[in-house]
Length: 255
Image (cartoon, rainbow, N blue to C red):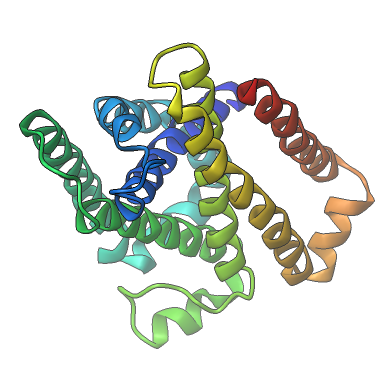
């Protein structure tokens, strides 16, 4: 479970971070430091990364279904078409990656629209998943949510926005670090080291600030469980230690 979840997050980081790097390269097109070659080298990895992220996400999803089945499935039903739309979004993401590959083969510039659409789709997925997660652990809101009309996103939780932004910032930051490591081992051009770190460092700093916002937005009882002890607290501090370990990884990648 934890291993496949970590791999799921790693491949998601490469997918989201790779799309962000494509956008960064398009924004800096024409400059001497533009990471155009890095983007071209990275594009073939993106469909593979997304498919592996989906594959590695199956085991954690099965654990969620076993442990929280009645809550999880009820939340899925309440979200209705928003939840089903994730299938179409994933298919559209693959098509965008293949269009990007076609542009690379044809020697055409990536442009701003294509990577922007990729990131918008990933942000939509994060919003739906976070809405589902918050609705899953707040069964007291189910009846009122159903009475106001189903098939819409659940926004009645103060943790929703910081949770979405925290996840996206983490994926972008970790993806940038992965690209920097890939550049160090010659998988992508050496310029990927600078461009990956230029993406990762601001994203990880932003994630740290968003993490403080998320922690402060939690209900007092949940915040106390994270800070006071128990299994939830252990997971929280292990996740924090993993975040700190990204700093040596960044230093290693920059050599």
